[in-house]
Image 1: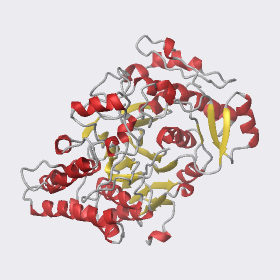
Image 2 (image 1 turned 90 degrees about the vertical axis):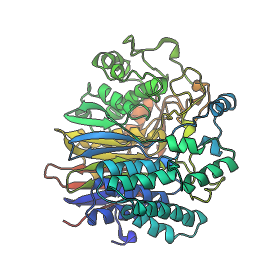
Image 3 (image 1 turned 135 degrees about the horizontal axis):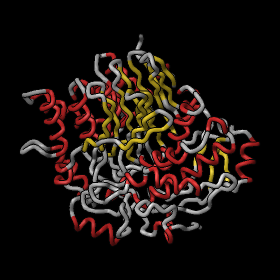
Length: 536
């Protein structure tokens, strides 16, 4: 299929890919057609997205990933997120000067390469050389300097793989170690990266690269209406979606009606409460104690739910106290005066399903060096507020907005969702989940249905140590202009600071696996998403 002919929805019993750029979707489907599984195709798609969607993601960026393995019959979260520098003097500089914008100092350790190779080692079947072929074709056709430089980097890795003896996993590791400078000799890629960081005044060094590893973690899960929602841990914003669903399970949303004033209102108010807890408690659980069990508990949910007033929109930020099981955290309640990301979901004939959210917020002022590896801004998702769970520390992961979703039904994969849009990501995911679970929409209907979101939360990309100053807009509610005027009027009457949006709210892709094992995939065409399936 020519990229120009690729559509935005697909149905197949043997494999589908939905993502951003058409060339990246084609890369994933090529791998599926060659006999690769969903892990192989996801890695190929992610590498290709770094070309087709460059600016929204980068090899120097990050990509959290969820995978359902039909072999293991479980879901695992892979932490494709780079960390802050290990140097304490660098951390002291950030604490004294802040985390700058549009400067290489805002870049975490590049994590995409290790994430993709770890995925191939643990769940895939193909070599690095095979899955990288579509990306090399895209790079070779490119005209920018970084295209040739990155192609040279990837070919050096493939050459290292080919020259290494041993199992597929050992050969993959050799390619990865070349990039991250873990080899005793011949780590010229890592040397080039370090030289680039030093030249631009950054703090990352070869030791930071060598120390990086992709953690494989248990997902955070909640049950909702017979489905199991799986999210990455609180080093992402993902668990707040679980909190919002716990609040909403106490309401009959189906009876309220799709996009009715009651349904939009109660979902928005649940999001506000959940995001207040996100902003107060979430951080890298390797460094801080995040009370996830308490935040998701029955008791805490039951004391928080009455804070939702069906007649009135809240204009306050209202974190709760999960430790004491109190609805509000006293003095932390206050009345306060989008970034680049792309998408990827894959399903294969064996029932393996992947959801990943590649990103980087790429900036070009500093270039990408001779390795062709541009940098992103995710250290700005940390802050410099001493004592805050998301305060910057040496080797710490930022609490990122990137938040893929996998959904199970009776233990088998039922849905995968990936959304681009910063703080909008899980809000859009909630829209899609309700569209499907409560109102029976198919993926094509769900990704094109009107959506709603709020900016009643802290800005995840503002590292200001005064966290109240990062609150975006109290009481805000954005809805697509295609939402009925009567609904908009009713929401405004409840006190929502309403505005309409003509374009897409967030950029989603999703797939559903039906009871027969067939996949139905779609990406919002207004957001330039694409989908393709294998012939049946």
